[in-house]
Length: 423
Image 1 (cartoon, rainbow, N blue to C red):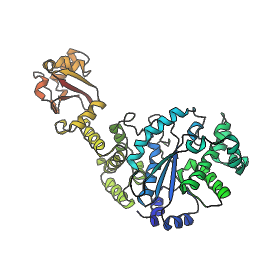
Image 2 (tube, rainbow, N blue to C red):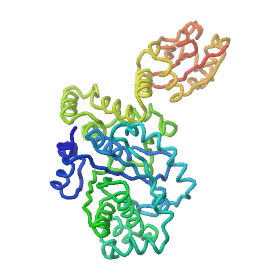
Image 3 (cartoon, rainbow, N blue to C red):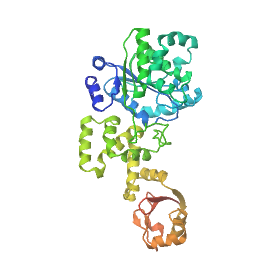
Image 4 (cartoon, rainbow, N blue to C red):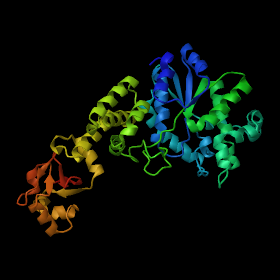
C-alpha cells in the first residue's frame, strides 16, 4: 500500500465515515510522510475489540510510509468523553490511569511497529495538560470557542437533551482534545487526527484551534464505529466485551467469537480488521459463499485478528484446541493446545492410582451425577477418553496419557473434563 492509493483503499474497505476535503487530504498524503494520531482514554487496564479499528488504521498508515502516534488520555481520561454515552462515567485518579497505560502498551506493540523506519510513538496528554493552569487554559484554548459552537456538536447536544444532562467537566472534554491536537501539531508535527465517527466533533474542534492559533491547515478522518450484528457498539461498556488482554478474554474465546460471526458480518470485518487486500477479501468471500458450511471466511478472519492481537503461537494453540473441542482427534493436539483446553473446560488433577476406578472418576469429574448413572453411561458407550469409546470393563489408564500427563474425557459431543495425571 502506498500513500497515493491509501484513501482509495480505505474507501473500498468502508473505513471513511467523515473527512476533511478528500482531494486536499489525498494531495497532502501523496506529497510525503505525514504524522497521524489516534487517541484512547485508558479507562480500563485493557483495550477491547472496539479499539481495534483505530490500531489497525494506524498500522495501515504506517505500512504506507506514515508515522503513527498513539495518544493515551491520561488527562482526558480523568474527565470523560460525553460522546456515545447516556451518562457520565466514573472518574479515575491519576495513579489508576498510569497503571492502565502501562497495561495496554504491550497490546499496542503487537500491532504497531515501535522500532522500524516509521516507528510509532506513545504519548500521554497528561504531560502537557497537567502543568497548564486553569487561567492559561481559558486564555489559550477556551477563548477560541463559542458556547454556540460547542452546543451544536452532536455529542454535546444529545447529552444536554437527555435526562441526566451533561456536567461542565464533560462539556470541557472537547476543548481538552482540541488542545491535544494543537500541541501535537506544534511539537510533534502531527498534521492529522483520526478516530471513530463519534469523534468527528472533537476532531474538527482541534482543526479549528490549529487554524486560529497557528494559522495552519490540519486534517481529520473518521471511520464507522465497529458494531456487532445486533447493532451494539463493540466496547468495554457492553456485556460480553472482547478484551485484548488474554487474562480477560482468552485467545481461544477471542478466536471463537470471530469464527462464530454470522455471514452478513464477515466480509465487513475482513475488510476493516485484517491486512488482506480488498481483492483478496472479495475472492475469499466468493469462495465462502460457494460452500458456507465450511466457514472459510470466518476462519480466515479469526486467524488474522487473533494473530494481530495475540501472536502466531497463541492463535495456533487456540485453533488446535477448537479442533479438539469440536470433535477432532485429541491425540494429535500439541501440549500448548491441551494447555488451552485445560483453561477452557473443567479440569482436575488426579493420581495414576485413581485411574482404575472409572466410575468414581466420572462422578467426581461431574460427567455423571451418581455411580449408577456412570455405570449406565459406560454400558451405553456414552463416554470417550482421548477420542476413543470408554469401555465399562477398562481402566482409564488404558487410554494412554497425552504428552505424558493428560486424559481428555468426554460425555456426548460437548461435555468435557480434562484429567491432569500426577504420580
